Length: 512
Image (cartoon, rainbow, N blue to C red; front, side, top):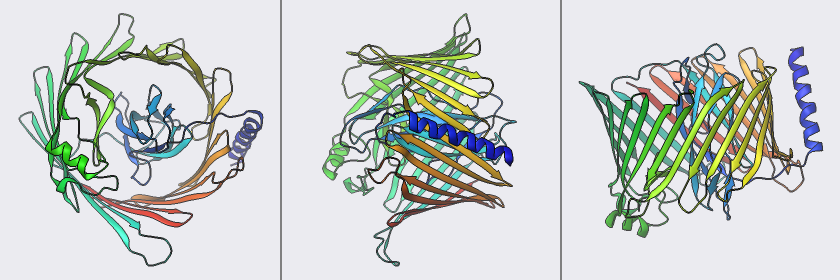
């Protein structure tokens, strides 16, 4: 306990020094959502001794009136490997971008059932990201049923008020016969059938085929049904994978209605997309292999298709989307080299070329000093051919304590993130502190209380609400109860703000 106190004091002193010595630069404010970010249940991450990872997509949305550019970041405690190398995301006003992040739990450093708190960052936005560690296992032969109930109060002026109730359910079925797998992903709500994703998988010799057909209904900004709730064909995706003399070939052909978006701004736009669809074809070719020097290389070529562009329907996101041209034009080529270990330094780079633009790229160098300090230096080549300021991350970390400082090429601080975690018997108390040019940007206290076959998670967030530098006020309290009840996995989440209750969500999930 005394050691923990000294560690806390040490980090606190460093934090105060950085805040008073440096002037921090401001970044854009975005919203971040995805699996593991409250109010969703913790993301289940597999503990693996191999490269088997848990992959998921996170959405960065810009609700502001001006265009922004952010660099996605994820910070996890020791015991969780995170794979994310992304170019700066240009996000137009009112638009969003998606980022794929992969997680691996490391055996010996993490145990099955543990809930780990990471931090996902974009601009000045910081969100806690909860991961639940699970052992590798085979999914049941038949499927999964998920039920969600969202309750949003009409107002918070009285104790007894009407609630808006949004009920959604998701049924996933999978049947395998003689090497052919047929699966259906069906989404239902109070409006009826909302989407249907039909998938067929087959292995023919060295070829692995996946065909996916997507149908969906049109919804507006408030999840209101549009175009009479008609289900229409949205897209067809056919994927072929095979290995050729050590080179892995992965080809994705996409045929989709480019007018279909989510959400639609109004009913007229939705009707036009369904009654007068515009179908386009695109293709993404990905090649993975190693050079004679054992350097991992990955090349992605987009012909009238963009791997960074996502096509969305309600409650589902598909990575990669076609262009709006009626010609098979060249859209993008990406080359990823690494990770490569050179004398204890891990090198990873991405280079991207698009028509009418110069090369854009990222070069990342990572090293661990004295088995305590993680140093990451990132150089960014922008679309004007200029090298943007380096982003240097210095992370002083122990298994559950860390202090991460982000600097530019002039060694001026951009962001400061501190995590403190204390284990009190089987309980866990963590504190997340983040600072920007406005002083303390946000502080989050999280208390995890284990229960029999479950856990209760309490999160208190304090953020800037005024103009005083470093002034923090209470902004949100979140209570999340995750429980295994026989074959059912139960999750309840309640969010409270300054003005009262914001929303409640109850989820039931079962495998069969």
